Image (tube, rainbow, N blue to C red; front, top):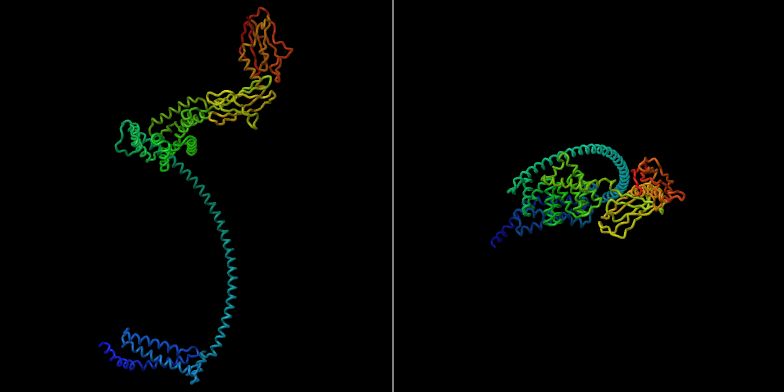
Length: 609
């Protein structure tokens, strides 16, 4: 409270001091501002603006002083100045309003000031004219701007067309350069490709040699360990893991054997025998599906072809054969694949082999053995005893298969037999068949021969009829034969040439040779002194000449045969006598037949009873 009283007592003295210091110059400044605002009145009521701003400033300063937001000693001069400015400017504005002057009080009293306003363009008449001029200028500018925009638009269009033409020209140039660059690149690529192929071939050869050396080292280590016997306590090398796997497997410790095989597989050694043995163990323990899963994982991780090949073996039947064929096609020089492929066609695998199976087995085994030259198979085996076993089995099977690869020896044959009614064609198949069909000529459908009323003991199925008939008017031509083997696979067709004239001669010759004891008959049916040769006469189409001798004499006599009648070959002409007379002292007769193919029969001896 005492502070407030003190302050109240000091306030008048502070105000008087501020008026004494500030009032004189503040009043002067305020009058100068009022004079200037009066001169500028044609433009705007500046006196009112100044009075309003100054009054607001005075109120704000007064509030600040009362609320003690600022020190009164510092703020009072500003309060005095703002109050003085507000009073002077407000007074000027009030007089202007009262007199209703447009140009200000001073201009009305002093002509020189009015002239100054006009020269400075402040007077309203001048301002109106200026505003009109400005408006017209703006319109003109707008018109010019629109024209300029149109010109710019046309210019942009022309520039755009020129740019498109330039871009098209540049694009054409780029295309030409790109074609040239592509041609150059292609030439470089071809050359680089050739060099790369050469480098890859050399690298592959070097890798193959390196693998062979590596496997040879592993094989020698394995052989040495096998000679020592017993498992290695802390195996580190692939030969040691393979050795342990065999030791554990043979002792019945399948778990440790499995672990050792897996450890060996981790080295990705491209040898076939460890993986075939491992696969056998897995099939026993986990079945074929388990073995397939394990080797599938190994094949995905490793690069060894042996692993991928053994993986293919873990599939069933047709799928396994398909994968083996695909592997051989992709890796035609991987020798072990041919031995494993041969097993797919073996008697052990199939139970009964068709001829095509035997040929496939023999082909694969022959290919496998072809790599034996110069030790070409050693690089695929760690355990050489396994290689020796494969070689022995291959040679043994090829010996058993014989000449099965001789296509001529194992092709169907056709035996024509002529009768008075036509041709009976007998087919000989080189293996048990479940169906036979034939066709005359090179085109047209095949005709099945049908089946006999009995089963084939080999196949357990109805036996196909091995014969069919042809009319006697059949001309020379080709007969196609095909058949189904025991597995139902179609074999053929085989084209066999059929010549009726030659077939007739060969058929007759075969009968004459087979039944030569019937050529000559002495004193037949009680006809003493007569020698009959009816049998030879019936098959005369195969005979060119018949010579004979009596009682051991030279064969200087001839039996003249009538000509062969292809339309009725077995008929004896009604005016021909199938016999001749001999004396009672004739005790024997020697006969030799010369056939139409130029061959001769042995000299046959016939005794008279």
